[in-house]
Each structure stands twice: as C-alpha cells, then as structure tokens.
Length: 147
Image 1 (cartoon, rainbow, N blue to C red):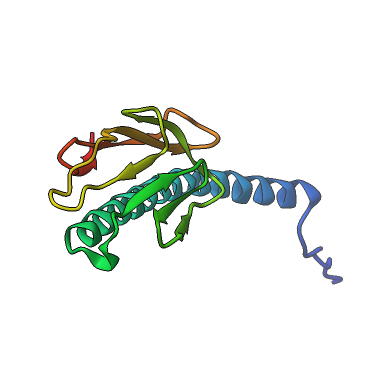
Image 2: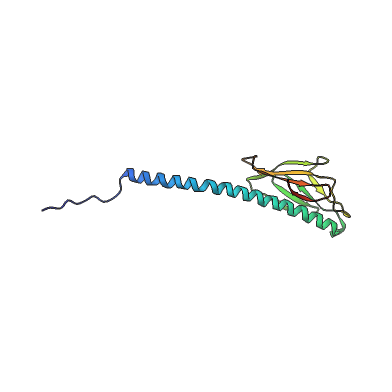
C-alpha cells in the first residue's frame, strides 16, 4: 500500500489572516500608548514651567545677583531672565496662549515681596490637538499653579 504524502505549510489565506490579526492587535495597543505619552508630555512641560517660575521667584526673593528674575514665554520654550537658562519643549507641545497683565510675554518678580505685575494665564497644549491642554495661572502674589 502506498501512503500519500501530506503537504505541509501555510496557505496564502492563512498568512493574510495571521498578519491582519497581528496588525489589528498592534493598532489597539499603540493608540492608548500614544495618548498616554501625550498626557505625560503635557504634565512634564507643566512641571517645567512651574519649576522655572518658582526658581525665578525664589532667586528674586533671595537677592541672588541683586537683580529681579523672571520667565519669558515663547511658543516652544521658556527662558529664565536674566540668566538666559532655556527649557525647550517637545515638538508636539506649544504654548498656545499667553495672557498676562500688560500684554507681554515675561513674568518678572519683585525683589522684596516676590509678587508680580504680570499675573495671568499661560496655556500649554498639544500642537495636533488644542483640546488637550494645561492652564497655568500666575497670581499677583507670584504664586503659580494649575487652573
């Protein structure tokens, strides 16, 4: 009696189904990670801004260099004035709205009180999606925090 030899291997349809399933699972996993990453980028930029504002206020109050310190806001970075220490944001982030008293883009702190005449808000948002944003408020007393 002669045995028939079975063909071993995969058909083209089986390979296409396997590749489709892997692609679908990849998309379902990657999308939540992208939104998580964007949220963490926003949180990190917010912390950087609050930290630099606090540093400027603290250095002003301690009379470091006998000059007032402040923070200058630009679309993609912030700068400690007068030291020119820059913090650059990720390309996906931008300061989308600077609304300070007096209309400028710099918050300067007073030497004896730590207060500022440039109170207002600064909004950090995703470049691709303005609805994902963080609003930082700066009070006249010089305190900064999230709205």
